[in-house]
Length: 105
Ligand SMILES: [Zn+2]
Ligand SMILES: [Zn+2]
Image (cartoon, rainbow, N blue to C red; front, side, top):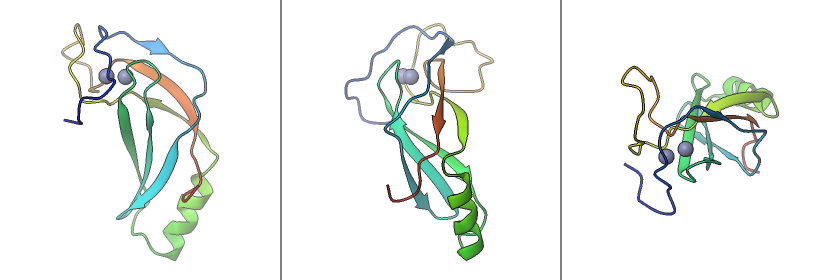
């Protein structure tokens, strides 16, 4: 579980947000990891994008996914009341698009 900060324990609800900014990418092992904050419950969350073995080729792949738009789901890991038992996510239900940031920005 992430540390409790300014997290809001709203009831679970599927809520669509507009494009969010302020996300940061890092390379961890063979994954591109995007870090940022959920616009709804304000948890700091990370999303992993597999890039394969992190050699020069996959570094190029990581670069090429930068600036692509993708929709991500809150995955804060906290308990949100009324989350459906069959939900295959562990956040507050919020989802929103981001432009994958370039690594190191
Ligand atoms: Zn959330
Ligand atoms: Zn949350």
